Structures are given as structure tokens and as C-alpha cells.
Image 1 (cartoon, helix red, strand yellow):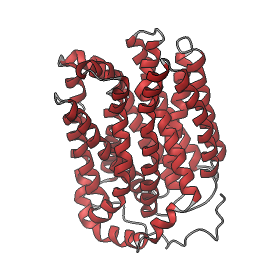
Image 2: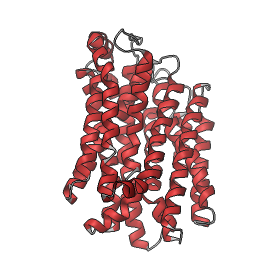
Image 3: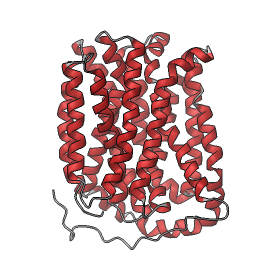
Image 4: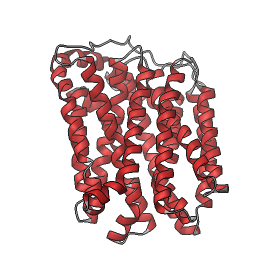
Length: 416
């Protein structure tokens, strides 16, 4: 499975694009990136404490309830391969703006009084997040070429801070607004609107840089050879599997951790706090791990360590779901945030240009989120079949070992 340098495709030298203009100060760029990042997980995490209420509202089964989390993840896999083509056609800045507006629309669709609108809104949210997931590494690679790993940690941490805040405030927001789960979830469309306004200066700047962007992207796109070669490269598949299975574990926790704890006797409000605590510590892992990765030539040990921590956290949930809940939440938070940050860091560390990062991001997230989509619904179905959570947690332990193997390959010192 090793890739020799002779097997690697020859890629033209990357073209560094301009990063500043009179229309977009670097501080505005950073603020825009952070506000966009805040939206990228918030609307998914906000729904987790509300699953039981949504289930009662529409009379859904456990498997159908799992689809509320699964559908956005599945459509992230569907939307990811389209994003490099969209960015070449319209420019990354315009694509990000469109995705943020689409995300806000999906949030509003999801709270309409119809189960069909609920799932269609989830589909729209998934596509919008997919576009942002693939666009952001390329933007970071282009705008911060000398600090790409550090900036990956910054925006990944911000993304998880948004998720933590959403998870912790969903129930209080429901009470404050007095409109049930619909008002609580619908309020997150305002955050998307704020991010869209903050991103407008970048769209204005992109008019000046469209020619340079097209010139840099054209050689990488070529007649399709670079993309085809990427799909035949073992390391690209290893990065994709590392991201995919790590994300599968994350989304099972997002969808079912409060329910697992509540089913073992923990009070619902406390279960939500444990979940929020885990999300909070994901931000620590998401910031520190990419920072460490950027200072290493190889990240094999780091990847295996994240997989091992995942396994330890899952084992704690299996052995002591209530008494060990806080410890499990802490370990899983560090491991899952670190795995997410490391997966995104692999995209910028294993490529030599913004266009290459977009292509690898499109492939890895297309595969990754299709794999991850099986997590919430599969866990729900397995729970329904067995009447408990032990079988699900054992499967998660096995998958942690697979993550370690994929991470060992992805952490090699190679450039695609």
C-alpha cells in the first residue's frame, strides 16, 4: 500500500494567490472565516437535545429519528465532490457566501410543521455544510500558506465552539423563546445571516482576483488527470477513511450520547450538560492537535494516539455509562476534536496548493461523510434490534482500531 515517489503524479508548482486587497483587510477575512466556522456545526449540534421532542411531535421510530442526524451527513458526502467544480466556476468567496445563505434556508425549512420539510431541510443543510467543509481548507491554504495547519486548528476550534454553544443553549433557548423546539432550532438561521454579511467583503475582493484564481486552478483541473490520479492513490484513501470513520464515531456521539446516558438512568438535563462538556473539550483537541501536526514531518503517532483515546472513551461508556460519564466525555472530546482537526490538517499538509487541497478535500469528504452517514442510523437500528447500547459501543471500539490503521498510512511524510 506504500506510495513511492515514482508513483506520485507530477503536479505543476503551486501558484500563490494574492491575499490582500483594499476591499478586504486581513482582520475582516479572519472575522469572516470564524463566523462562517461557527455555523458549520451549530445547527447539527443544536438538534441533538431536541431529538426526543421531535420524535414525539411526528411519531418517529428510533431509526427514523437517527435519520435526522444521518441525512445531513449523507448529503455532505453528496455535495462534497461538486464543490471544487463550483469554486473553479464561481470563485471560492462566492461559493462560501452562497453556502452560508443556503444553510440558513435549510435551518428554516427544518422547523416547518411537516416531517417532509424536516428531512428536506436536513438535506439542504447537509449540502451547504459540504460546500463549506471543502471550501475552507483550500481558502486557508491559499490565504495563510505559511500557517495553514495553525489556521486549520483555529477555524476547526471555532466550528466546535459553535457546536458546544448550540448544544448547551438549545433547551434554555426553547424555554426563553416559548415556541417549542421549532423556535429554538429556527433561531440559528440568524447566525447564518450574520456570517453572510461578514463575508460580503470577501465577495467584493473576489471580483479582482477571479482571473488569478482561474489561472491557478486550471492546471490542477486539466483534462481530469489530477483528480483521477488522486482517486487511485492509497494515501488519499487512507486520509478519506481516517476522516470518514472518525466522523462516523463523532456523529454517533452527537446523535445518541444524551440518549445513551438517559437510558442508563441519568437525568435528561444532566445528560445534555455531559454532552456539552464533551463538545467543549473537542475545541481543545481541535486546536492543539493541528498545531502539533504542523510542527511534525510525520503525524503517524498523533493519529494512532487519537484513535486510542477514542477507544478509551468508548470503553468507559461501555463499562460505566453513568459513573464514568464525565471521564468518557472528556476523553472522547479530546479524541474526536483532535481527530477532526488532524483530518483537516492532513488535507493541507499532504497537498502543495490551494487547488490540490480543494481536490483532496472533495474526495476525502465525499467518501468520509458517506461512511459517517451510516453511524447515527446504524446505531439507532442496532439499538432497536438488541434493546440496548452495548453492541453499538463494541462496534465503535472495533472501528477505533480501523481509524488507527488508516491514520498510520495518512501520517506519512508525503505530498500528493
